[in-house]
Amino acid sequence: MKHREKKKREGGIPTDSFSDIAFLLIIYFLVATTLVRVQAITTEMPSGDKAEQAQSEKTPIVNLRGGQMFFNDAPVALQDLEERLLALDLPARAPEKRVVMLESAAGTPYHMYFEALAAISGSGGVVAMVEPEK
Amino acid sequence: MPRNPKLARRKKRRTVPVPTASMGDIAFLLIIFFLVCSEVSQDAADIQVTLPASARVEKAKSGAVARVAIDRDGQIFFNGSRVDSAKDVELGIHALVSTTVSEDQRHVQFRCDEAITNETFEPVLKAIAEGGGILDAVGTKKESTP
Image 1: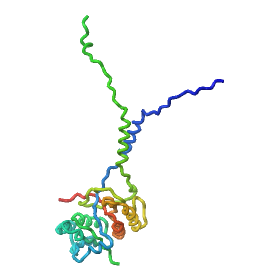
Image 2 (image 1 turned 180 degrees about the horizontal axis):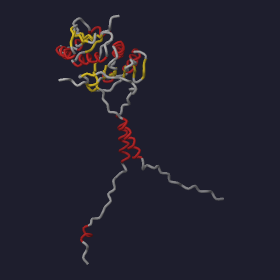
Image 3 (image 1 turned 180 degrees about the vertical axis):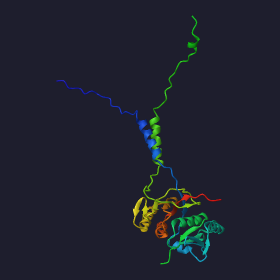
Image 4 (image 1 turned 90 degrees about the vertical axis):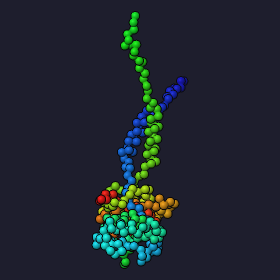
């Protein structure tokens, strides 16, 4: 009886289209990737006990109330606030003396708070949030 | 018999094959490069936020350990997922920051709609500070007037 001999087939992996697949994947990544680096204001806010220790009567304070900015209880425009903060030369001070308190009255919109935050951190100050009295 | 001068000048045409054998390797190396360098965004695309503007914003230097957002309806999001209160933000940041070793790994990206009032955003800012994060308040660049 004759045994059927199996034909030996040489199985090869087709690699001709690999480069096409790879380039298609690259195109996908190029199209789907968004190279965005956000613009932001970086500031470290002292918290808890640190914030309370940093505050004293001499600590400059920025108030936001009624749609207006106040620096040490005097009304100021944003540009004046920046100039007055720069005049304090905060970067030359010791880290614990760079604190500027930021207080906002109820209903203060974020865009106003953001501008005050930018002015303080831009002049080298450390922002300490003042919590409203309960 | 004299040769035809035109035929004599004709150069032999050589077929120059372009080496394409390594094209696949190069392409896959490029893919690996993109995969390694890409950072998958954790922001949910449907968070509706109008960012505030300032002349003092700068390009963020480092990546963020967490992303916090407050949309125009006052809803708070932590890494793209909605959370109920600022306390959840504090706990989330604290959990992430506690395992970090360098200052660069403490940055928290904060996006807030410009119309949101302080009753909503202040507890979140406090939560970021209490959680040990360094605040990166995201905004748009306002061109300064001369």
